[in-house]
Image (cartoon, rainbow, N blue to C red; front, side, top):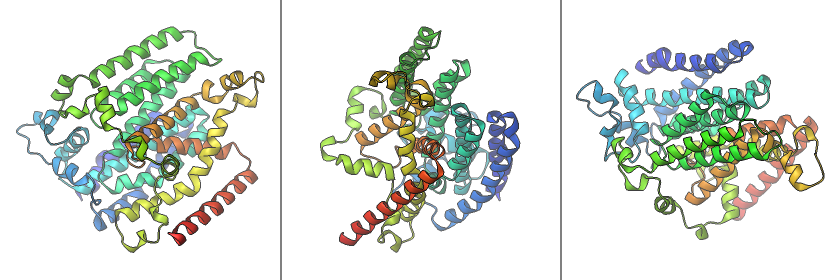
Length: 430
């Protein structure tokens, strides 16, 4: 009952309020209806999975659950993030759960429904990004696609911080896309605020976000649609980025905010220490694993036990068969010229005329590439890369909408036949 009350009194109003903020004038009713439908469908599904499999095997969810129930000596102690010193390497998610625990019972389902709320807000964020990228119609379709992005559901069904990180990264990309369209204070507040908050969840992503901002600034200069205030944009962007990097490398600041591990300070030695031995990685195998994200759902062995591995694998199946092929089509579309018109026959001019250089699509593709490189360096193609799934889905939607229906059918048919044949052969000869 407590979970239901918190959902009705906090989570649903929060998601509806965000919908009101990002909606175009004629889309508010549509967004409100979709938010309510999402809650009606996903709430009971989350409840069922919480009853059957409350915790993932070998995950961090148990630690998050118990660390959110610390005794507080006073009301002001609730907001003291340093109290997690020595308990969690990065205390952001535990601190967030503590705030929820302060206004409700210590209830696992209540915490998971917070992740569901974040999933819906991620969808609404990508609705807004879709509007800025193309049109309100594209934004509406993108919202539906994000809510149906089943690999993200896994991080609703289990208490993991990755959904919160995906939300922060989505807000960061909204700021980047807004900045590309128009250099405003709200854009920099989104960019700077989201990067700052990422410090408390996964500090190494700060470096990624800073490099993306600098790359986008360079693209705006390199492209054919240079902004009149390019110098001021670069100066402001450089100062914001350097300030955030200084905070990420300031051990005293991090220590005072509950981040006490020496390995979670932004230094060259720590970045190298966190990386895997690249020589031990099979690059083609990693690229396939990264694109498909999880193939366990297609393995007969996985279906022998109903556990978190099976859930993750099954939720990845729609991603494998629908998103991946059209993501590749979408990448090709981004690398083509705006309005399909070349300025000249030279490669350089063709590239400078592409959507990658002249539209916010370039920033999104850079984000995917950077996340691919991070995942390769860390040897992780699942949790670390969760934030790029909405980006890849959006690019895939662009790939779908940019091709004729007959071509789509052929692409999909060939992809399903080839992929199914490969999996059958693999497991038959394994």
